[in-house]
Image 1 (tube, rainbow, N blue to C red):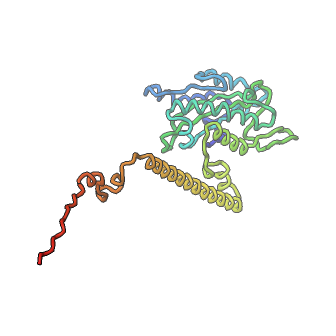
Image 2 (image 1 turned 180 degrees about the vertical axis):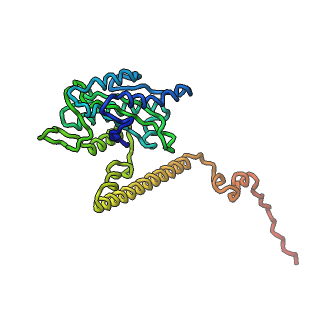
Image 3 (image 1 turned 120 degrees about the horizontal axis):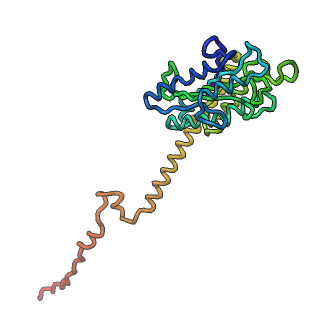
Length: 299
């Protein structure tokens, strides 16, 4: 599962002003799909669905008490499953969309709130999500993903929240709590696996990707050793499963043979075994003739 925070820009992701430009961009796919009669998804939040862009813009833009003109007013977040993860989420686009909304509501937003270390819950986060089914420059046919617009302020419009801060679990200073993005990525991944009963391989994990990209040479070598160990364990487990299946199959065949009716050896040996019953009928015992002894010659 790939979760990322697009950096602020002067274009679509300019978060110092109104959220209207970003919200409008997130609707562009709907227009194309409606013209083609394809299933579309409206905006959603923690409890509501099929919300209009006007509500999104109004709620996000009005939740900015005590923020300066150039301060970030909201943060965009991308949540993009892999093709294998999508298959675990459903077979159709509608099933996958429903699963994605569940994942956002039950895993991503609760972990996002918890990670600020301020005692916040999912209900304290003001956000709106939008499902997209197309991903530019992607060869993946199953490419559903989700865009989030998350307010800089909490629902009460009192607490500032920044997922881009470099402070982590701070207890002193101007920034209390901080935000650990690595921790969010790992916990969101674990939450996905638990929610959808997904058997994640080591090479699919954020830990593996992060280590191989950013870790030291020593850490990378250790990770490769873990990978080889996992592969050996998986190969052994697969071979054990294969052997067990074969044993069960043989045992079943033996049971079937034992339960066969007694058809004589001819049922097993075929033409090589004569039909004993027919031979018994054809062989009639011969009668012995009484042979009289020859009389001797008279002298």
